[in-house]
Length: 178
Image (cartoon, rainbow, N blue to C red; front, side, top):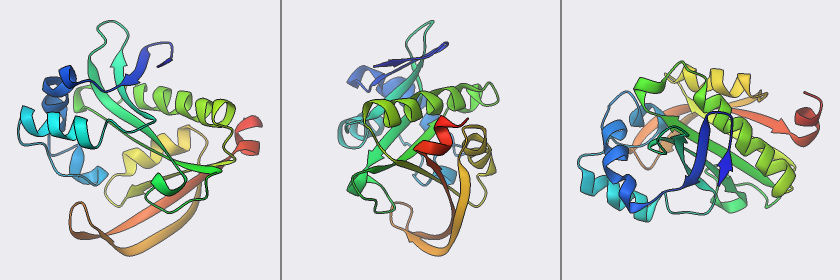
């Protein structure tokens, strides 16, 4: 568990399925992040058990009620979507629409960055965002990530479509100098 000023980042639980469905059924959330909208509470429960139960995957919860409103994950080495060595990681995240624009995801991402560099001793962190999801790019910029490259015409298996992904990077040295 990781705590910030306003948030608790904790492992996902089966009891979060209803809350997850409430936010993940919104077509403004999943597709731009690279995953399909959730179709039912049962679908969300299955996603909790098969995808969100992984190591370093956290439910983003407001301290006031501990209710899951988003997700942040740290995928180390081969767990990442971009094939990294074990000394590097990729951060992914999303948050429900009612919580957009409140600085909650940058707060969660900064906490995971700190955890990645200080506790997991990683050297480099990566993030990506797809065309059409510039909000995610702004989160990365706010958290210190720097543009690295654009990958065009990649086949995204989860959605079975072709996408353009912008990749950003943050080294341990850059983070320490902030």
